[in-house]
Length: 213
Image 1 (tube, rainbow, N blue to C red):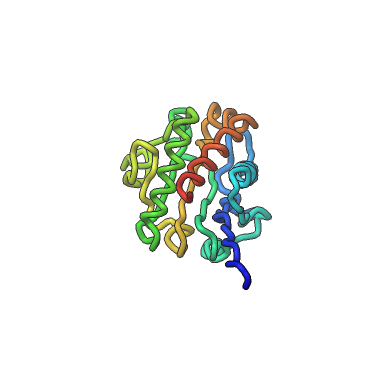
Image 2: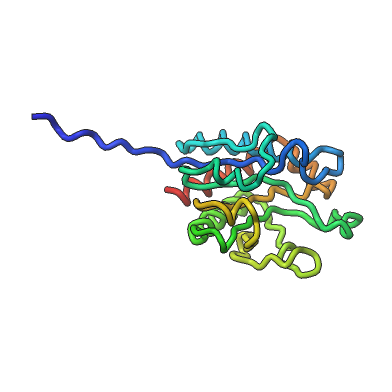
């Protein structure tokens, strides 16, 4: 008589989305670097950090050819979490004083069917970012300085952004991460450093691992 088949535990899978694409690469930094290049560099560090925790990773948009935003969460079907990596800017009228704006932020959509899980993962990432010494930007909630994105978790820098395309159309938990304000010269110089990028990636991985496990 044969024994029972062993139970195989499969690691959770995270879809890591590189924000923007080659034809529309996002904001241009102070030094002329397109946001897409920053997003890609951080996303690959995030992949390494996630894999080091035992999670599986599915990269989306890393070649810069994902033009249709709705196709990104569809490409993540079957994964346990969708994380879109971005770098931040400010409204055009505040560019002359962009040095006032700094910090990370996270966004989830209340139109996502897994909003509770999305928020839990965003808050976990925000917690680990703060533990690593990073500070939430917070200005996105301001009706004048930001876009009036209300806080979902103020302490950890998480906002509601209901019409965020990649989050609201996803059928899995989804969030968007803004790493830093690259139209701020000091902030751009800081997030460009390999050690800072590695610290951010490690914090994101720790938050995701804690959330999914």
